[in-house]
Amino acid sequence: MTNQYDYDVLYLGSGHGTFDGAIPLAQSGVKVGVIEADMIGGTCPNYGCNAKITLDAPVVLMRAAERLSGIVQGNLNIDWTQNEAHKETVINGLPDMIGGLLTDSGIDVIHGRGVFEDNHTIVVAGKSVTADKIVISTGLRPHRLDISGSELAHDSRDFMALKTLPQKIAIIGSGYISMEFATIANAAGADITVFMHGDRALRQFHAPYVDKVVTDLKQRGVTFISNADVTAFEQNGDQIQVIYSDNQSLSVDWVLDASGRVPNVDNIGLETLGLTYTKSGISVNDYLQTNIDNIYASGDVIDKTQPKLTPTAIFESMYLFKQFSGQTKASIHYPVVPSVVFTSPRIAQAGMLVQDAEKGDYVVQQTDLTKDWYRQVDNETLADNTLIFDQQHNLVGVTEVSEQAENVINTLLPAIEFKFGPDEIGRLIHLFPSIGMATWGQL
Ligand SMILES: Cc1cc2nc3c(=O)[nH]c(=O)nc-3n(C[C@H](O)[C@H](O)[C@H](O)COP(=O)(O)OP(=O)(O)OC[C@H]3O[C@@H](n4cnc5c(N)ncnc54)[C@H](O)[C@@H]3O)c2cc1C
Ligand SMILES: NC(=O)c1ccc[n+]([C@@H]2O[C@H](COP(=O)([O-])OP(=O)(O)OC[C@H]3O[C@@H](n4cnc5c(N)ncnc54)[C@H](O)[C@@H]3O)[C@@H](O)[C@H]2O)c1
Image (cartoon, rainbow, N blue to C red; front, side):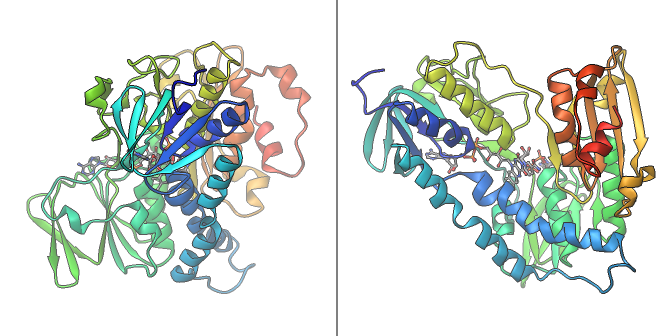
């Protein structure tokens, strides 16, 4: 590259959209800098996936014990304070660990909020830092409802830092964060009310499976209010009044605003550069290049059709590593990107969606998995999947609701991505007994 600049490649943000690719890029001899305003590693390790799944672990255990009740005896309870403390033990070392991987690879980590001065310069902590290429990987931040009293509501990061669990919680929105946190907080004993913007939760997922999860949560005491137009939050002593739809109100101890996440594109100098973005994020071409030739984007901040998830961000940062280190000149070619919502049971999917398959020439195979002997081992009572095959009987899509849905989708991914036919399927031997064998047997 060039000696004209401080760095060959400078990343704005240090999440998965950056570090998975920045580390091998630096190891290949490229001079790399990373600017981070908050915690090294970004959302996923610190206040996203890793934190959430740690808080969820006791819920999975409780559900398993519940299904085997009578065999496993005694009532289990979640001690929230211990659960939160355990989460801290598991994740607190991650920023140092990731920071160590960056610096050990020769990367300069610069702390502070970066703002573009020109297309080769970012100002951070009062200093100008220059680079040949810059990658914007600033991720998303919580959307905040623009209503009176919005400052009384909290976000997912606040929820995962709670030392004691409030008794009565209102959750606004019914997407990923709402449904996962409603599951966890309900299992830990809180009284949850979900205010739905419309009449459907988890619109990205197969509606009949979402209905099963919502029905189950209702039976466990979660209240869902559909078509709720939340208009204000008001402090009333130590309670908060949620005002919604024609002046109805609900008094709660704590409010989680889970009304979505928006791209971090504001006040970082993009307008000065004339860099193009929409309300969904930064516009890029098939090389993840913005309309300014030497500036790229990676991760959640991109305006894209692929799900804004950690594995997508990792794939993009690895693609940029290969492009910048000269290993590829090709455009990005995304594989099948699976997704899962960690409710209990989970809902997971990959490839073609059922509603699209029903409009085309596909074979849609629905299975009540509770009849499968392997699922009866731990008394699964809520387990279904739908496999979608093309006319050559190649698997093109799958969705499942069950306690093991994420493992089923992981098992089936190679068959979808690499278009396995009967020969390839017959060549693979899975461990027995295991979910891999039970799943493969469905093909
Ligand atoms: C509660 C929650 C749970 C989640 N669970 C899952 C899950 O189970 N599975 C999954 O796949 N995905 C999950 N996600 C999504 C996942 O966290 C993101 O897809 C992933 O973190 C995206 O990585 P990124 O690098 O694009 O963005 P981020 O990880 O958000 O990193 C962006 C970084 O940029 C920094 N930054 C922003 N602006 C500036 C600036 N001007 N200067 C310097 N630094 C800046 C930020 O501080 C941040 O550290 C979850 C998200 C949340 C919020
Ligand atoms: N398991 C996972 O992979 C996982 C878990 C959590 C978060 N995430 C990531 O984080 C992102 C954000 O999650 P999220 O749950 O905040 O967003 P989301 O887009 O999944 O859900 C937002 C919810 O807010 C509602 N809403 C929108 N505007 C509203 C308004 N004005 N008033 C009331 N409700 C409103 C929507 O109808 C929707 O139900 C996800 O898209 C995903 O990329 C992933």
